[in-house]
Image 1 (tube, rainbow, N blue to C red):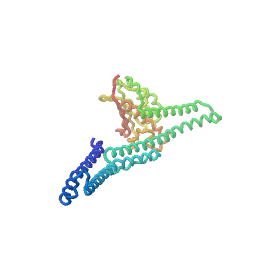
Image 2 (cartoon, rainbow, N blue to C red):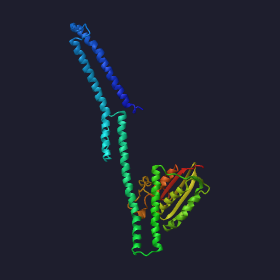
Image 3 (cartoon, rainbow, N blue to C red):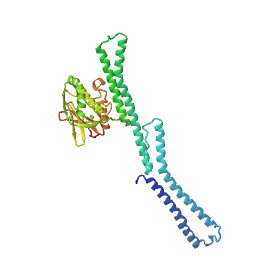
Image 4 (spheres, helix red, strand yellow):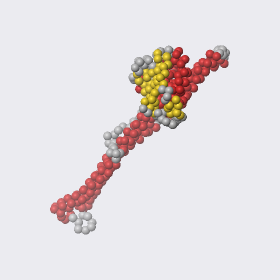
Length: 355
C-alpha cells in the first residue's frame, strides 16, 4: 500500500508545501514589508485603496516569487511523473516496431505508481520476448519432427507408384508404423496445446487403476523384451481411484516408451500405491540415469537429455511433457530423481478423489 500511494502522497505533499510557502510569503512577507516601510519609509504607504509605487513593487515581487515557487514545484513534480512515462512510451514504440528486447530505463526520479509502471512494462516485454522465442522454437521443432515421417512416407509411396518397390506386407506395415507415429505426435501436440490453453478436460471415473495399467504393460511386453528390459509389476489391485483412465494410460505409455528408448537392459519396475490422500505411480529403471542438471528441464517439450539424439533414436521429445500435462490436469505433480539402483525413477502423484 505504501508503494501504491507513493505518487499520490508526493503530489499532495508538493501541493501542500507550495501552498504553505505562498501563504507564508504573502502573510509573513507583508508584515516584514510594512514593518520596514513604517520604520524607514513612512511616506511610501498609501492611505487610499490604490497602492503606492513601493507597495506596487512589493506586490509584483510577491507574485513573481509565488509563481517561481509554483513553477519549481511543477517542474520537479512533472519530472517525477512524465520522465518514466516518456521512457515507457518510447520503449512501447520500439516493441511495436518489433524490437522485443526494448526495455524502459528505471529513472531515479520515478516513484510510486510510475516506478511500478516501468517495472510492469519491463516484465511484460520480457514475457513477450520469451513467448516469441518459444513460439519460434516450437515451430522449428514441430517442423523437424514432422519432416522425417512425412519424408519416409512420401519416398515409399512414390516408390510404389513408380514401381521401384514391390507391394508387400512388410512395406505396408512400415508405412502404417510411420502413420501411427504421426498420429502419436499429433495427439501429443494436441494434449500439450490443450494444457497450455487450460482446456485439457478430464473424463473422471472411479476405476481399479491396476487393471487399466496392466492392459498398457501387456502391449509393451514384446517391445521391452526386445530391448532386454524385464517388466516388474508392483500394483495395488485393491486401489480404486477417481481419474481419467485414458489419460493415465497415456502417461504410462509415454514413460514405458521413454524407458524402451533410453534405459539400459535390466529390470523396469512399475509401482502403484496410495499414501495418505494421494495416489502414486512410479516407473524405475536401472540406468543409465539422468544428470542432475537435465532433471530440471526433462519434462519440457522437445528437450532431450542428449541433444545429439535423432528422432529415430531419441523420440519426439514430447512424451515426458505429456506426462507432466496429464498429471497436472489431475491436480498432481511429477518428479524425476535418481533411484537406488543407479537409474532413474519417475514419480507421478495426484489426489485421490471420490466420485
